[in-house]
Length: 145
Image 1 (cartoon, rainbow, N blue to C red):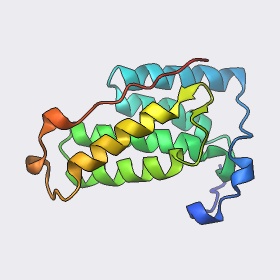
Image 2: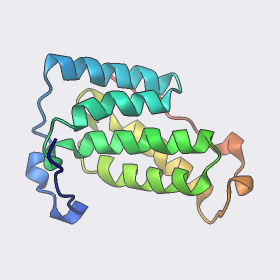
Image 3: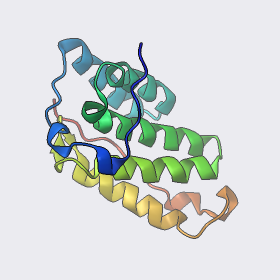
């Protein structure tokens, strides 16, 4: 597969973001990724969504990148990698915030709210030991196909 050059968020043509059309196979990968994420199988969710991400041009895959980064963040948290958790959460939020409150059947409004709560929890912290893990909210992706 030919590598697509990366763009910054400011270079993305936002008119193309919401014109994503999924094939029936991609819908299955997407739903499987949501189920895996909600089961706490973040790495496997990442892999399912990556199958879709690979097939779309950059402006059409920002949404999937946001979900992949969210899954990567929680995978990093499970591995006690604080820096990776924070970086992926911020990158995920930046991308997912570009979309309507509900997109491809996903309730982004509640998902972004949970991401924001977690970012506030880790704000100013420098290590995993400084986080009260009980204050980290594990999001559940609300999906209606």
